Every structure is written in C-alpha cells, then in structure tokens.
Image 1 (cartoon, one colour):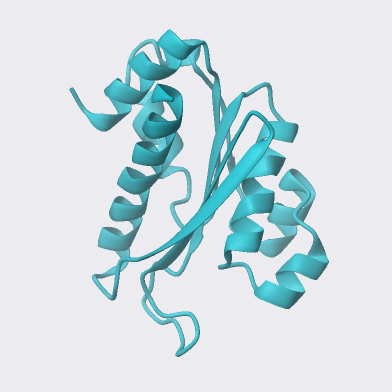
Image 2 (cartoon, one colour):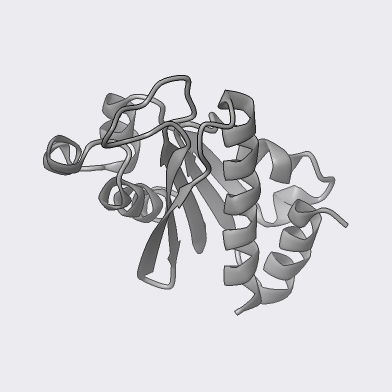
Length: 156
C-alpha cells in the first residue's frame, strides 16, 4: 500500500476527516489522497493558497504574521493549518509553505518547507530542509512528508 492508502485506512478507522492547505505543493497532497478510490469518505477539501492574499482570504492568515515572519515560516504554517480546520468540516489538517526553487535566499534557502498540523484544537509545526534538490523533488518530498504527518496523526 502507498502512504496515501495507509492514511485513508487510518483516518477512516479513527473517524477523522482531512483538509489540506497547500502553497508550494499546489494541491499535490490533495491529489495524492483523491487519486485513491473511496477517498471521499475522509477527504473534505483542499485549499491551494499560493499567494499571500489567498492565504489571508481563504485561511485567515494574519497580514501581521506574513509581514513579521514571511510566508515560509512555522507561524504562517500554523495559521494555515488552523484555518483549514476552521474553514472546513475536517477534523485534521496539514499545511505546507516553502521554497521549492529555483532560488531562495541566505535566510530562506531553496528546499526549506514549513509544515503545520492541526487536530483537536492543537496545532504543531516543523521545518524540513530538503536542500537544493530541484523544484520537482522538493515538491514531491514535501508531499510525502505531509502524508506522513497526516498518517501519524490519524494513528494516534
């Protein structure tokens, strides 16, 4: 079974519904989940919020948070994940915001991706440095990591 298939089984067994809030992956996590027949039993919706305006409008990310920390930050990832739960019928949400490349800066290098996970009123975050492995590879690695975060949460 794939990670997404394992996730659907675990979420179904736990009675959880899922939402995603994606920036640099552009909906790849939602696509991985909905590629599987029967995913509608646990997948509620996905938010693709590529711009800061979309993050604010759809997920209620605060402009002050974006101004202070930037879009690629654990603070924004936390607000994205919480916003996905707040603006859906889901119990569990993952968020992704990062620098897929090419590019980046000394302070926010290519391959840095921040994740948020919201379940039961608790939101956690983490940052993964995938490195300058190329845009497609960063996006694929971030998708797999997000599916893994959702799976761990569903298995708790």
